Length: 70
Image 1 (cartoon, rainbow, N blue to C red):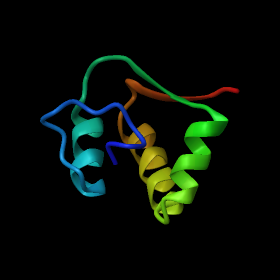
Image 2: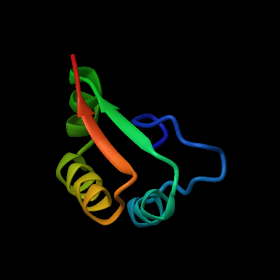
Image 3: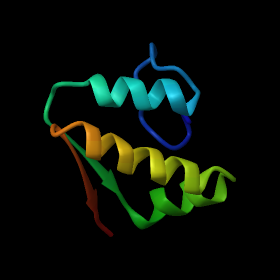
Image 4: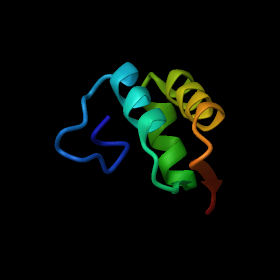
């Protein structure tokens, strides 16, 4: 997870903990996903799970937005 995202030191390395942390974050946040970032996510072997988790986070947390960019 640390290779894919710029996570704080206290962030856990598993998807469930990351999802919980992102859902509970009350600051307005944009997750910028570039082609390179998406390629890295997909190459990890956990691409589907990571992208689904990010979608769930945005569904549950009105402060969290995904921005797709080059």
